[in-house]
Amino acid sequence: MDKKRGIKNVAVSIVFKILILLGTLLVRRLLISELGDAVNGLNSLYTTVIGSMSVAELGVGSVITYCMYRPIVEGDDEKVAALYRLFSRLYLIIGGVILVLGAVFMAFLPYLAKGYAEAGVNLYLSFALMLASILISYAFSAKSSLINAYKNNYVTTTITSLGMLLQQGLQIAVLFTFRSFEVFLACTIASTLFQWAVTEIVTRREYSAILRSKARADAATKREVSRNVRAIFMHKVGSVLVNTADSVIISAFIGIVVVGKYSNYTTIMVAMVSVISLFFTPLTSVIGHLCVEEKEAVKPYFDFFHTFNFALGVLFFLGYYAVIDELVTFCFGGGGELEMARSVSFVITVNYFIQFMRQAVLLFRDATGTFYYDRWKPLIEGILNVILSIALVLLFGSEESGVVGVIVATIITNLFICHIVEPHVLHKYVFECKAGKYYLKNYALIALFVGMLCILHFCRVELSSPVATFFANGFIAVGLALVPIALVTALDKNFRAHLGPLGRKLTVFLKKLRYSEGKEGESGDKNTGS
Image (cartoon, rainbow, N blue to C red; front, side, top):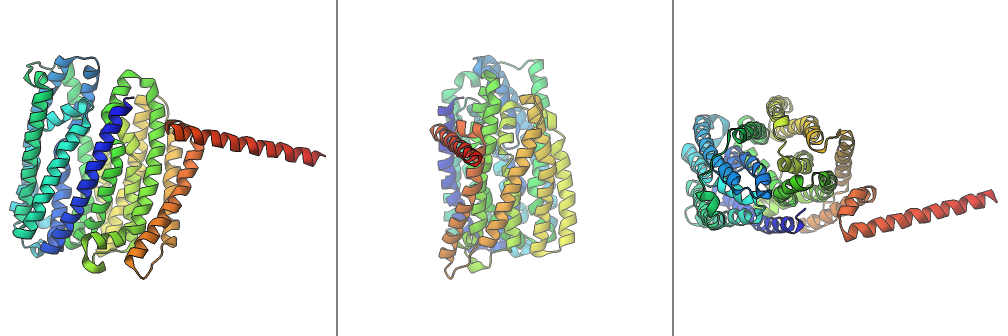
């Protein structure tokens, strides 16, 4: 595996993500203080509904990079150019579809944004501005995917991150000067135009031959691409149903003010997840090239990443639950008025941990292109999630108990659909073995985390100072997290082997420990016999 390129992609992504995270928290704090909770809730609703459609996030970007892995490894520039032209046209079609869907959604805005009058903004103009920024992104999405296919994710990460930092700087200035939500959203258009311009410069300089080529994809390639695009589109539709359903249902049945409070918790959670997910997503192209060059080496790497997935998750998610209330007050103000019940933060933590435990599977799925085999899964998952969410929000009632019901619905669909179907497909079509051992390990790890979370719930302390409470609970969470991390490290030989020098030292230590225990046992037997 190209470890050097992989480390570079991960390192650049993490640095920029942390900077963006700090900017995001500052912008949200100012948005709440200058324009109010209702505008914050409305912004969260817009972001949830169409924010996931930006750049290559429709999912087609994964298909592009996957299809290009083999011709890039084989040096077939003509086929790479043909695929690029094909996907460029495809993105224009997608942009048209999104424009139509956005126009249809706009008609239902007043019904989905319950209590929007409190925001005091033009619903249609503000939504149109955010939609425009998404549509512009499709003009250069194919070029971004081309850069990623050559394992240069750090380049697109840098461009996107600089654009986001520019957007945040402009939004901070707007909040202090104009105090206008519409101008605030217009900053996203400026950011997207900047990213487009820089992407054009980079691709014209580095991949000019591919951009100038008139090569066209043959019929067989078009059929393969069409099949994969249809499959990934179904994945994306299901993902949108799951990821947007929670906020939309809370907004429609409870109100946008509650959505605003809920989004404060999820903003921090999503920011955290987006940072730690960078240990996985930038490696997609590296794993993809490995699958072409050394397919037999893929399974041990997957097993390593699955255990690493848990170790990373248990540390950060226990930490999140331990300090989230104090963090919300610190980041967004409100003097405690923005805090929600512990039951809400508990189910948020469990929900996102369960979703995070799919990172290893999703990394290898995207790298190996197994989108087609479970194409119906996301649609079934999405529909069931919407039905369950509505049923549980009605059952649990309004306000915070209703929020708990909505999140519980997402937990159920994730546990019993995603965590069963996705590993099965990956093991059957890539690793060519059954997923039974994976299921036992995966559900045991999830159960172990929930058990540690319950212990943490009763170990949390409330001190006189919020700062002291923050640090005390943070240290407690880290201490508890080290227990399951040490356990899985001791039991998983493959994990220790891939950790490098540290893993080898741990293996030698464990062997010496077992040897000494064996010697003591023999000595004990002799003493007993005598």
